Length: 94
Image (cartoon, rainbow, N blue to C red; front, side):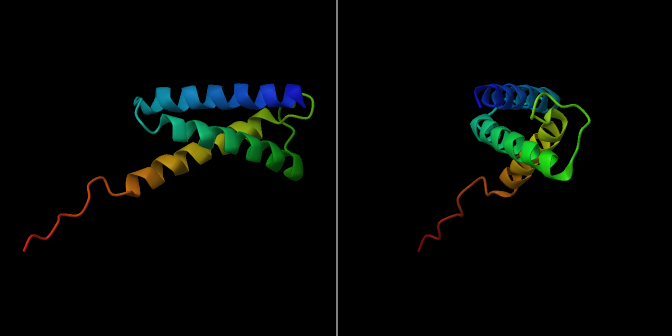
């Protein structure tokens, strides 16, 4: 269990670093991206087990499937954040 947790945190950290490096922006969204990377890594690992993806396996950890789902989760987070309003609506003064 401890080895799995270390691999999850390590894989999520590497994916977060690569995502930020490719994106080229370090902003206030990074903590939310870190949570998305962790959740995506755990979900990808489970998905890899259930689907049977055995491209590269470390014990019972599926790093390829975990990395793919972590990247998709971070991309979805950035796209949803882009849809959020950036300014409050103007107040109508009467």
